[in-house]
Image (tube, rainbow, N blue to C red; front, side, top):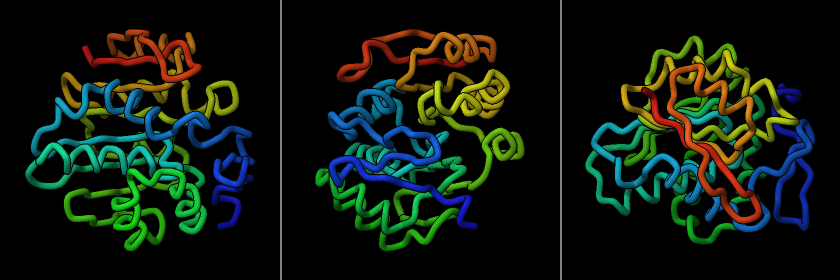
Length: 222
């Protein structure tokens, strides 16, 4: 349905901004470098990669985080596919996704392979990456999910503008769907997010953020 798809404006013709949440999808400074700093390094990747590794994500957006992880997985020479599950309430139209990803030539080969097969939410077999995007409110769909992730990318829009994706009950569901010793990382260091992760059973650390963001959060399930 139309109301379930992302509504966008474009900043400088290249940066998609959500009309639903009035927030950009990625860092205007350098979205790919931010992804690598926050979500890969924040989860100890690629060093923790192992056969069968499973990443889960709140907020699929443009797919940039997935592409960065897929590129790192292949560069690490891992055997078998990386599993990647993302929860997205308002999926972006494929044409908008392609336009947004043009800003990142470093992942263009992976973007081309992805976009050639991507038709929208659901399962997508990319060979060395097994992707599933689950559409709907994560407060419902995550509770119903039967999987467990080794690492979480918590990438909803700003907690001030999208608080429902950061509430304590959802952080508890993240913990319940995390493998023993698993991790989570996010660009935000908002106090209520960190407290929610701690209450869910994570050991939470505030570390330097990317670019103009002074701090970010990483967490390891106790």
